[in-house]
Length: 308
Image (cartoon, one colour):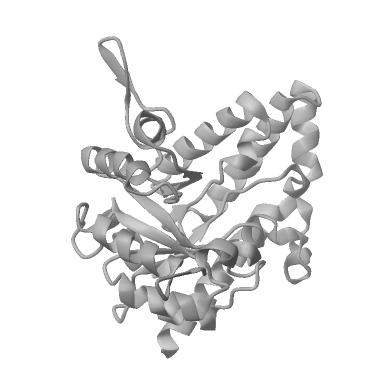
């Protein structure tokens, strides 16, 4: 799967991923109104509004981008109807040729970790048949429980030719409470990075591993160190834009081939119409605002890479 992702990034010259992290506050009033008229102000109504919102944005940007990253918590808050919207979104994005990165941040051990891996990347057996649950192409994985929690995902990745992105250094302000702590003089995030590189050797694509990592845009110096520790690891970079990460800070996340990283933007894209920069599009044309925000982001990132 990493080969497909790299090929799409190269073909489109777009090392970006759109985070489909919908909140009802992001959904334009006319979409919510139509959903509520059909289903009422219910979980089903919220699910329908989110689905229609996602679909419109995907229709507007799918030809520009290689991948999307739906964050499952934004759907889980609406219960089973929300998970239905998550599944519909994943399947629709795949039908448009997009790589789907399920941002699920799962991490457990043994059979529990295996069940997460099967549910999101593999196929579950039901009698003589098997079914895919959500069928993302990649998922994010929390490594806190060690190899016991990660290996079941790697096993499924090998079977299904899919991939994972392991949390190494996250973009949130308090990440350093644990991730920056020194272990025999070495920051914990570096030790995790080395382990990711080790796991990655088990699941290689052509040039990069199907075991990627997550390194936040808000810590560029740490990203620079981690890039050197994990030369064959693709880096998923959250924190660009709304969280303060700047394109010029991200150049060291990329290798000399201009590849090696993919930068995420969520509300900066899907709620672009709410920004002063794109307010001229208006609420009715929210998807067109998202398209322009994607174009601007691609130009920003690729321009910075080209200057290094």
